[in-house]
Amino acid sequence: MESGFGSDFGSDFGSGSGGGGKLDPGLIMEQVKVQIAVANAQELLQRMTDKCFRKCIGKPGSSLDNSEQKCIAMCMDRYMDSWNTVSRAYNSRLQRERANM
Image (cartoon, rainbow, N blue to C red; front, side, top):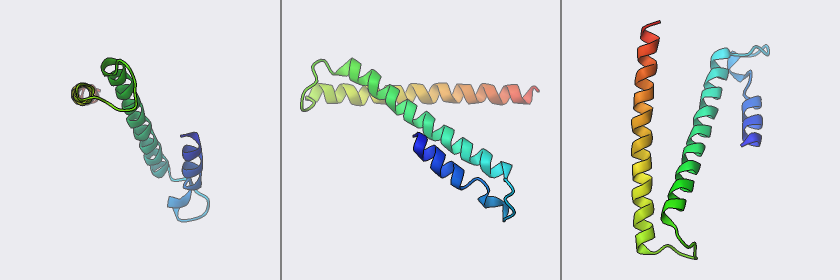
């Protein structure tokens, strides 16, 4: 991830300003937001994989049996549902707090 962040981010630093080497703060902010979103998605996937693997796979082998497949599918569905519920609640709270400022 570091190499992608450094090379992609750095190469576009001043490209949106139309020349003169001027940095566009809006462009930089959007690039940072994209990088944060990618990092969050990677972390979500990693955590979900770790938790569901530990919960569902008793003896790792070359393939998953039917019960392991069902367990993993249900675990991932529950994890995503929980993540979405928490995300909505968090975003709602942020909006309320911003409105009260």
